[in-house]
Image (tube, rainbow, N blue to C red; front, top):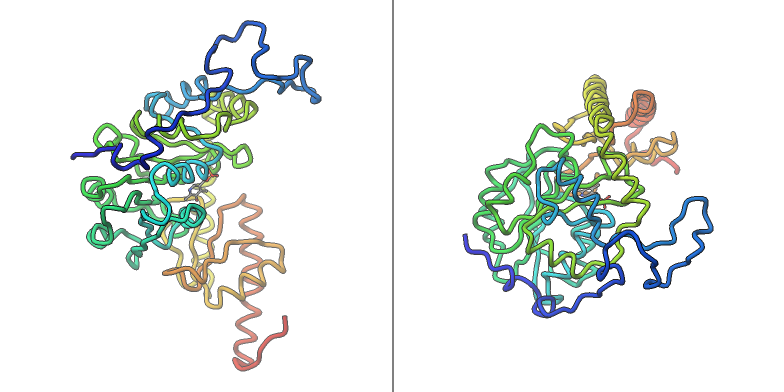
Length: 366
Ligand SMILES: *Cc1c(COP(=O)(O)O)cnc(C)c1O
């Protein structure tokens, strides 16, 4: 297909002169560094952090490249996936003119980022079983539709999206197609990174926040053509990934077997939680999950959510979200946490059934 990146970009971005950091000009590690106004004595902390980190995270990208089977030049690293999402808006979407297509119910940051950047949102809901409507999506698009965000496995519905539908959109959508794979490690679905060679309009996002257990470090990945990655690198803040994050994740990648063990543990607990929830009479539906959470339908979900908080069990209330009426999103925890959730759920749901039986008209005091 024909895909002209330059015509998709905001015009001023193509002309932009990026910030050149002191470390862009000399990348050697040995020398007397008097170029960046750093503190020569070291740091106030035990470990030294006085030198600015590598702006392009070369060592880290080399290792990520090996585990993801993409070239280092096809990798962008952001301060969380959220930074990559924001940079895409800033690179491609002219405020007040362009639009993006979102597929609710989906991850909330796409809409927030669109709002911050004053970009129109066109919503094409998923089907009842949370699948794409490719024809409706294409019909909603026009020449100003710059980005289509597809989340698979989807948050909050937990299912994977049909591959053939994503392929239809990659072939026919004129803008950039983002496939957000934050939960791919919990799915049997292969990553769309294998399709990068075929689709110059594809960008795949993954993160170290979920399966790797590094949410606090803030490290998100975007995989795309070298051209797209070059654009993101030009507009990012120069030192967007801290040295501590780069070092820590570099070491973590050497220990990938531990990640695989944790993923297996989470999958076992997901099965346990599914089985036990299915035994509870008030649970109306547990949506099939390819992620590390379950979307569960329970009558009076708003009330159940509040009552769970009173029991110090915090889940995510999705009851007001399109197609998720009366649904709670429950992250898979440890065995002890899952058992505590099940116990609290039985307690609060028994209470609400008792109340319901006594009098439906009676409003409970809160
Ligand atoms: C959790 C999540 C992310 C991860 O965001 P980070 O900024 O990398 O922590 C991205 N996309 C979706 C759909 C998520 O649920």
